[in-house]
Length: 494
Image: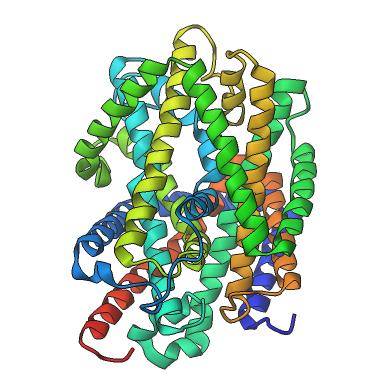
């Protein structure tokens, strides 16, 4: 523990305070977190839409600009990981559990219960259901990750800066980032990471519990979820012990193999041609409506505006809360790639994989719903298993589904302990095992506390609240990075 900095102790203390508050006064914790979340949704919804759209435009500009040729490292540096492994690692860290959790639930819900504008159950609602799911998991989400990762990789590998969020703000604030202000920036980033990852771990535990409930009648309650979190915590800490090049690498590749098996099963056992046709059609409508959807907040319709708050703003906050964790992790595994190669890979490949996934599982779920299965009536965490129940070899598919959720769970938590270790040991690219273990226990504790205080709603409240302060830092990172690029072009030092 000799490596640790003040950021470690401050954020660890905040984590303990949050945990004890949730345990001692769960009702008060849930009430206050709900109030904060509601205030942010009402007053900052427009802000989330604008900044995320700005990130997309900035990424596209860099891809096509002369800056795209700049390498994230020295000129003779080359990537450490192959393309398949690189894609597997960033995808597992960035989307894993969310994709499995909402793969069936989101499209079916947008069709039957919560369409953006159309009447529920209509053809328009069906078409919108897949398109809006693409929107929430597509280019915008990955642009949030890409901006954070790109800025950090540039400063770490090209200019030898420590792997800290504060180090990326040097071109704007200079030596001030070496003092208290820099510590504040890093504390915000670490705390956002803890809450963001804990939220997703909560989702993972809930869905594993949902699978056991649907398949075996196991109670769907907090104590079962607590046991799941404890078991998975032991597993991901064992993985963390093996390091980046073994545990996370092997698990990420295993994730993609399992996901591939389930995807093929859904594609073959589901309405294959309908899935492929829907995927193709939705890609066109998604591209066509990106500009209007990116800025839609519906100020003249209370219902439509509330839908944007509940869905789009929530997802943008989710991705922003995950940005310091996923961004640092993607930066760490992307050394040696050019800016153009990096952004093209991060924006396009995971988005397309996600689109294929949602097409296969979403359309299969909608088709089974129309054929009489009550997929929409199931809790979100059970929707995947409700779909598998309509297929042959349903038990095998469900067990594989639980296994996939578990490996995504382990990979996300493992990656997070690595990143939290980096952020609290002055940017070390090889944080010590004891530090990673401390953060592994801390994030699992927060996940358990959030589930104890209010289940999924408490998870969502905490997520949106934690994302706001880090979003301001992201804006500063973009400005700092652009200033550094201009300085480099002019031959100036940072």
